[in-house]
Amino acid sequence: MNISVLSGKGGTGKTTISTNLAVILGANYIDCDVEEPNGFLFLNPEDIKKREVKVEMPIIDKSKCTMCGACVKACRFNALAKTKNNIIVFEKLCHSCGACEIVCPTGALSYGERSIGIIEEGNKNGMVCKRGLLDIGEPMAVPILKQLLHELPNGINFLDSPPGTSCNVVNTLNYADGAILVTEPTAFGLHDLKMAVELVKGMNMPFGLIINKYDKENHILDDYIDKEGIKVLGYVPYKKEAAEEYSRGNMLIDMPEYKEAFINISETMKGVLL
Image 1 (cartoon, rainbow, N blue to C red):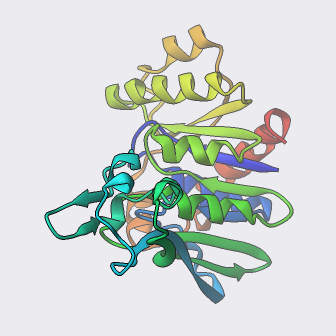
Image 2: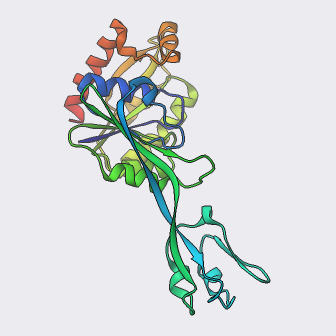
Image 3: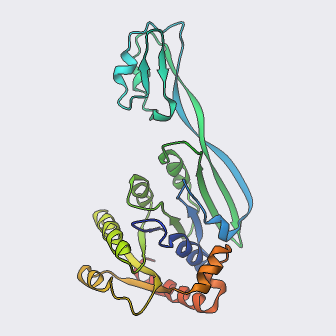
């Protein structure tokens, strides 16, 4: 059972929700925010194993290249360019589609590999903790995401999604059986919640909502939630003490009030998603 935790924007607390719920339920934690993963800061997994993620890229044999330019014309991603005396490869634009190798009439093109990041896996009190780390300056996170999500452990997996509603989020949802949306009671939170709701509805996926930084005096989300018939799984209250514990890298469930809130959410969640 894979549950994706997402939000329409960053900073709403989806990593807080993912890590604390994973511990409460004894589930596994998968950090899919490969450009800025931070769930390990709170879980502190042990016995971490690392492995590289590699993608293929074209290599040109100049002794065979006739400078015909067929490879440049075939590349839809502008990863190849023809100069007066050379064919230049922009490796970070390459999607490893293989089109250039197919159209080369002299066999001057072959494919090699290069590293774009790593996947780490450790454990914490029986939980499997995994994350992908994209190298700085690499533009494409999808190859790491796919490899990270292709090898998920058995049991319940919380997939801590990238922020927003980009293709990286869609790729994460493709591996999920249900979704938890996280928002905060602000105008920005409402705006981005609407985009996230449209996304999961478009993928015909069961989902529920957790309102983080909840203030019972604030009703900005109420009309939209009622109109869309969204199931609210629970509320995580806003307190200065919680923000201080978060900034120290501590889990909110170490605070009795928050532990009770997450236990209540997990019980409600079982009836909606599990």
